[in-house]
Image (cartoon, rainbow, N blue to C red; front, side, top):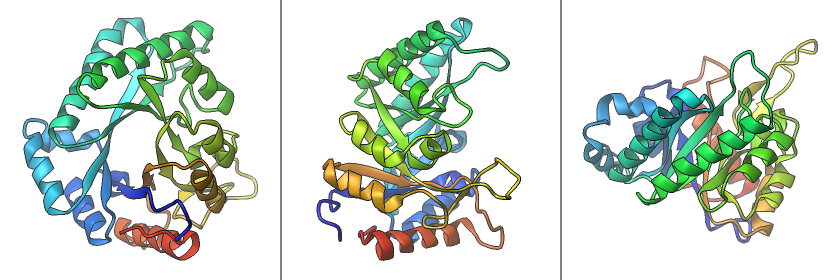
Length: 275
């Protein structure tokens, strides 16, 4: 095991299972991952019974690392409802025994984003973070392709516009790379603000003539994952790293198959103990 990486705990994101959250819980637990990130789809069954979800995860020996809470709109007409929704999600997360609330900003369709929009986003994120902090739940801002925080300079502007006491960073190393950034440098740059990570890989382009990209199992794309983990070691990061894969790139495999590939990469190449 790489020195100083023993303090990293690994989770796996249920997004790959496409809303079949109970199957995701079974599979992620069976593979030995100690944590899981769930999406808001889990509310369909458990919204009124968070204790039942907490007990289900406990039986599977899984920590509820994070809830993907959805988008944050900067439309002033929606502001109150947006804040209330994420606070409600944080309350559910707390009652289900979870740790962190993930939010993604929502880029206005067909409209340019100006400095005032960035300031509004920072203010709304801060307000959400203040209210969830009262519940004991930290907020992690997740820069994402297609969002206001798509590119490194935009991420910097959003973080500058929000209060670091209440808005931490969820660094997704693949999204950051596709957006034009160096994820290894980002780990070092944001070491003090980093709450947790999405460990992810990406292949780009899929075809020589295409600018598109595809998320793939760890070690099958172009993200410098050894460099990412070296930076985490050097910055003495302690916390959760959630492996994420949006969809199985080869549909002959199952989500569990893909998760097993990524686990083997972490253990055999990065030489960390996942389970």
